[in-house]
Figure 1: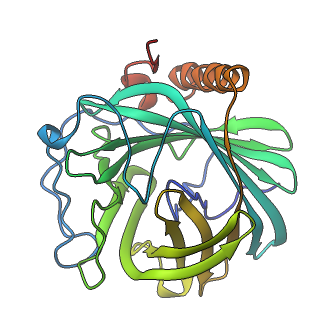
Figure 2: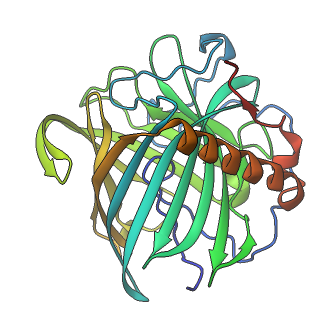
Length: 300
């Protein structure tokens, strides 16, 4: 499968411009980023304060709960200039933590399949503030083509190469409030913006019907208007249940089809695989990922 011009990720980014090569990112810097401009419009400046975050990576935001050992599967279709293909993403909340930009984050491991073939394996890093907002601190997405690993050019880590963490889910989302930055990584042309579009919506998918759904509109202002927007639907207590598209030539429509609590053996296997990918990152992304501490397995 050809490298896609855009990458869609249900729990992580909405849109990410391709960097045009399959080599690792250019060398970055671990220096703190300068004060953030209002990248997503008035009132959207990133207000990152390490003292706001919990010492432990518990994430219990009702719209974005990430409990270790839980696994969520979404399926649907993606339409692009290359045609239509079926997509399945398996999202696993690992028992791993990783310190990024001074914050202990929870590691999410996503496996992304197009027409049944693995095209991406991603580690994403989340942490929650004491007020309840969930932040995204970076992603290490390994790309595959025809079953072969081809690189991780879209890697970004907060605090390195001017990348900045952003808000994956607000503590108390309200309509009519300013748009917000979900993450920013200028070296890979990554900028996601979120808008609280609707609340209390009714949505039915294979896992059931939900009456309390929050709708977030996501877009990348670095792209032309015809690129379109992505909309994500979150149910309280469950998290993401649906993804749709508005406009654009690349459109993704995904539904939650399975939620399961992993058994002990399954959970151990997921953790081992995620640790293996974390270790590979130190060779694949020497200028970015290799500057982070290694992921750690939760203690007993």
